[in-house]
Length: 108
Image (cartoon, rainbow, N blue to C red):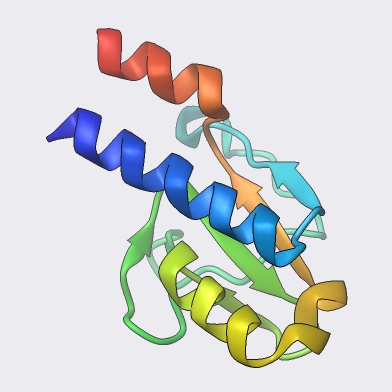
């Protein structure tokens, strides 16, 4: 199951890159999230990131849209950017684990 999640995550990231999403930023790991910077996307009451469309909790990665002030899971971000290509300049991939870290987690 973890291998499938890793493959899906990397596939979504590649699709976003193919669509032209080049801006990205690494989020702090959950245990280091005591320090908040002003550039962080909005979180729900429990402190978790949540997709604006499906309300899924987003632990590994998400896409922010500064134009709409929205946070999206990768599949919904792909859908948004496929339909509204002009939003690319407002979007950024935010991730907790890079590709190497995700692969390392699978090996554990």
